[in-house]
Image 1 (spheres, helix red, strand yellow):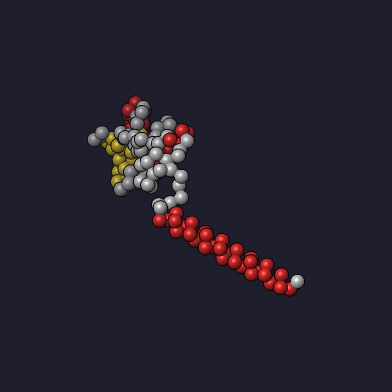
Image 2 (cartoon, rainbow, N blue to C red):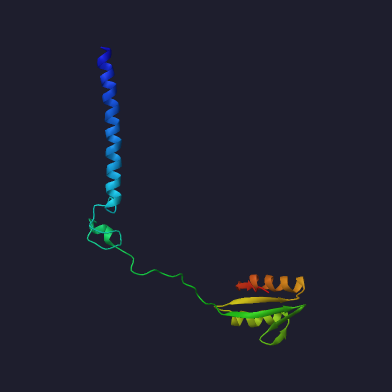
Length: 138
């Protein structure tokens, strides 16, 4: 009985070695022939290949992000004054002009040594009238 178990253990070891050799052979053949795909292509996007109809759609054009250019109404806050279209205006005068001019545009606020109070008053007034704005990088 012992001899029989010994022979079975030897057969298991041989079977494992044969399986490993077979796997290595398949990998080598696969690499040498250009891959494991079933299609006739050569990996360069050409060839007939076995692709179902649903998988044949390809993007023909790469879409670029849409960048919408926006014109701004430039307002400069200089110390305690508001400058718009080369005129010095009070906050009330400025808001009247902006309400008429800023229908589909935003206001671009530039800070030229503005007082905090004047700058914040402008922002509060723009928000109150629902006029969009951005703060310019200085």
